[in-house]
Length: 233
Image 1 (cartoon, rainbow, N blue to C red):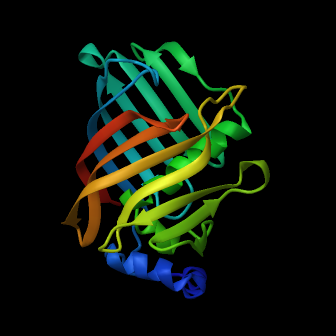
Image 2: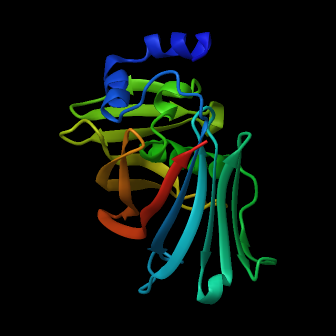
């Protein structure tokens, strides 16, 4: 572990160090990227009645706020999607046949905010980032809650992580995640839940997750998935 990372760990709130311990994270591990595969279903629109099955591969950095999620859906994977955050820039594309654009988000602060919130919410799948990513800002919340933030200026965000009785991440909540990457951005309460925790490669990881928007007091689930494979390199 580098001197910088060691110094950062000593400055973390005790609740954050406890969270890392409960998840099985050990200081000194040198691997910096999580890779995982998922199967699941999602909705093309919030009010859609039907679900679209997908398979996905994702990489998540444990040292910087970065991830790359690539999915295929539809018959023979004819529709592909990419949701990513790299070098401080967000990306969201949907393509048909691999080269026909269906949707593509333009660069904006709202897009970066949304992708940063996703990264923070998915720390349950990249728990080593709790100790290794020095760009994260932590503070203790109410009972069973820890707040984690990242970004600066107009892209600064914060997500509330809720813990279960075992001290593991059970959910993530942001009160103002942009529901659209183009104006109007529609800041909307957004919530994710994790379940089916298993001991895997020395860590406690959730093998199931779901995400939804809260609109006018009603929750609208739009994404559900299971982790099929998880590793680090």
